[in-house]
Length: 229
Image (cartoon, rainbow, N blue to C red; front, side, top):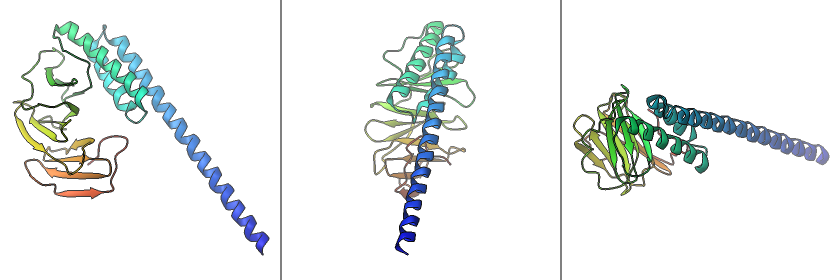
C-alpha cells in the first residue's frame, strides 16, 4: 500500500514537472517570437525613416507596442527606432524638438501625432508636422500619452502621481486625477466618458469629470500593458 502511494506521488510530481517545463518552453518560444517581431518592426521603421517617415513612425509605434513586456533592452531598441523615425519626419517638416522621444501615439483618424519628451508633451498635425499649441498645465514629466478612441481627449501619466486629461481640440486641461496609488497604465473608454488607471496591485475607474473613482479593483495587476474595457 505504501509503495503504491509512493509511486502515485512520484508520478504526480513527474507529471507536474513535465507540465511546468512544457509551459516554460512555450512561454520562452512566445517571448522569442514577440522579440523577433519587435526587432523586425524596429528595423523596418528605421529603413523607412528617410524614405517614408510617416510609415516609419507607424512601424516604430507597433515595435514599441510589441516590446512592452519584453524587458529594457527590447524597449530601448524600439524607442530608439521611434526617435529616429520621428527625427526623419521632423527633418521633412523642419520642426525641431529638444530631447529624446519617450513615447508617441497617433490619433484614431491618423491626423495627429502625440509626442512625449523627457519634460514636455507635443501635438503635431500629421503628416505635415506642424505643431499645434501644446496641452496646457503640464508642469511634470509625462508618460504613456494616448488619445481616446474617438480622438476627443488626450490622457497621460504625470511624474507627480497624477493622471492628466486634456481636450484634444483646444489643449485645455480638462481634469487632473490623483489615484490612491502610483499610476502605471491607463485606458480611456470607447466613448470617452470613463478612464481606467492601473497601479502595481490595484486599478481604479473614474467617470470623466468625476472627483472620486466609481470602481476600485484591489489586487488587480496589469504587467504587460493597459487595462481593457
